[in-house]
Image (cartoon, rainbow, N blue to C red; front, top):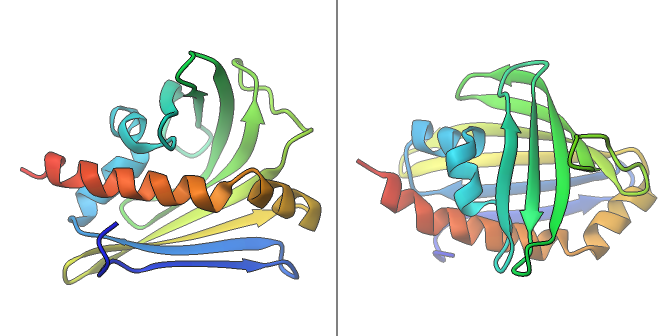
Length: 167
């Protein structure tokens, strides 16, 4: 990660939230596309040595993203996120969690609502992310599974991808 890019991570157990703020050195359209187009998401989502593989990306209110985190051995761990709201190039909200390959949520694992807000800055875009959980237990389980570490690697992978996408 480039040292001049903001990355803030806050856990609030009273509100059952994780808040992340991360800056990226690229234009709004490029950063938005990296978060909302399967061909780009699959290039950075999923911390190495894992990789993401999208089965369905229907980016519209009422649509969903169904993807697998694929291990180096080829094992697939599925996730599904339903798109609740979308304001083009400004924000989107999705709800979901771990699922099976058909998108049936696995209620033994944490579920959350994930809200991304995109704010243009002079040298790039700040993405403000708010994850809200149903319980402190779910929040703590997500953290224990390595959420911060995984997202930190994902963001570094996105940092490396963005310059390659610039025209």
